[in-house]
Length: 250
Image 1 (cartoon, rainbow, N blue to C red):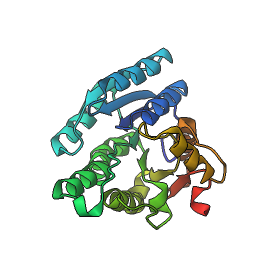
Image 2 (image 1 turned 30 degrees about the vertical axis):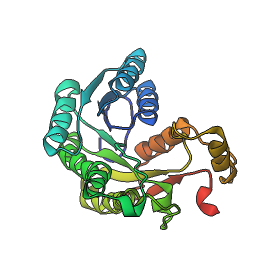
Image 3 (image 1 turned 60 degrees about the horizontal axis):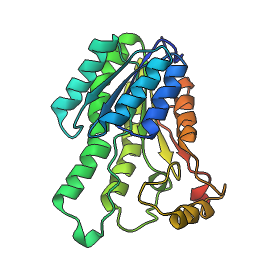
Image 4 (image 1 turned 180 degrees about the vertical axis):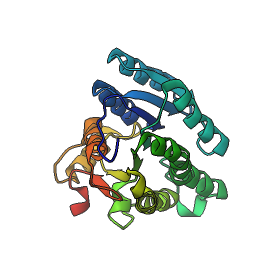
């Protein structure tokens, strides 16, 4: 495969990422990829994503995984390769968007957030890389956040999240250097207002749109477009791409 990457005929593992992850899976399947998807509690969403993949004539498997557990990360990668025959593209999307005042943070909040957001991405990448080497190359795409990419925390109450997402950028850069000679490109997407969290009311959603230079939420497909670009590139690695409608400009 060298460094060139055609999506058709390759195998993608999407770790976590309900909502946006399902749309990513559907678009990759439409371009000819087979997909494995992990989930923690959202089995129904993972099943629906798998059905979308199969509707495009591609193979799909799903597997429950607690990505804070090293053994379950290992089983997830093994299951993907056993079921689909190879592993070419890894997309690390597992996330816990914890909002809590600094004074109320516990040791568990800190450790769990870093385990899901950062350590799991490292573990899954480390496990996937030998399979990518065997296939002649690959792509790893991590998910950070527009605030971390912009280099400053914008909101109080997200300390472990911000630290973890900043770590994802560092992981992306360092890992890209480590595996470049194997034709494995490692990049990250840093989303801004893509999809509103379910607990936001209409007024809060509109306030976010007004604070975004393009004046709206992006929608899942904008994140998908960034993922596709980072898969198809042959010469971008160690980069973190903001997809935030210009939010960082203000």
